[in-house]
Image (cartoon, rainbow, N blue to C red):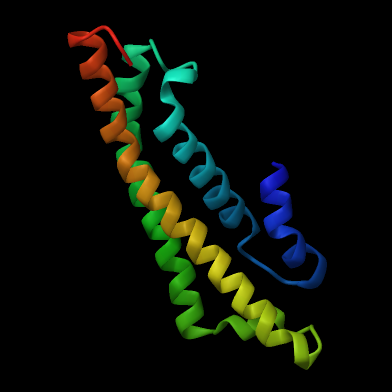
Length: 137
C-alpha cells in the first residue's frame, strides 16, 4: 500500500478528475504481488498448497483477460480523449508533465501486471511439478 500511495500521490494531489484510480491501484497491486510470488514463491503461504496452486492457475486465465481488457480501455481513452483531458484543471505549464506521468505509470504497471499474470501460472505449474516429482518448491 505504501508503494501504491507513493506512485499515486502526485495524481491524487494534483488531478481533480481521474476515473482510473481503482484500475491504477489494481494494476500496481497485481504487478507487485504477482512479481513477488514469481520470485519468492517458496517463502509464501502457497509453497506447499498444491490444490490452491492448481486453482490459481485456472483462475489466472480470466484475470489475464480482464487486465488486458482494462488496459485496452485505458489506451482507447487516451486515443479518443487524450491524456490532457485528465489534467485540464492544472496550470498550463504542468499539464504536459502530469499527463506524461499518468500515461507512463499506468502503462508501466498495466503491462507489467499483464506480463507477471501470464508468467504466474507457469511458475505455479513448475512448482506443482517440482513438489510432486522432487519434493521441492
